[in-house]
Image 1: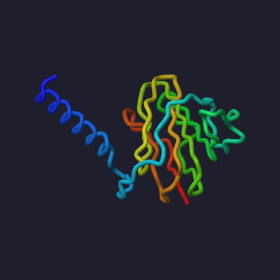
Image 2: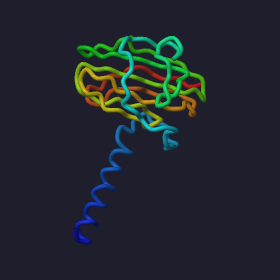
Image 3: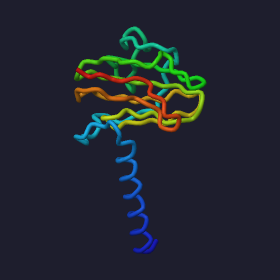
Length: 153
């Protein structure tokens, strides 16, 4: 590969990265802090619930750390279940958000700048430490549905 080709490829990658980082800027936390953990796409139960992890999730394995709060959302025919509302989490807790949609989409957590692909019918998840206080929208990008507002105190 020539130097010119490598330079063009590096420039294109940089532009793409900048677009991904700045995308969906409405309502994001202006601090621009990076997430404490990376998004995952591990499958979880698809029943709609917002129970503590001990009541709603299977026994954690070595590859799946125990979470303090698991939030499970299902989208069918543009209807969000459980219905859109606010979910409060204590600062410092490990949170897992799992969404199953009947159409392909992308999950996005504002302020934490986390996202996950949502292939139709397949759960997608993000897992993170709730280390920033405030009110954060959790939405889908392509169908533009607000799933819930996460309140971290």
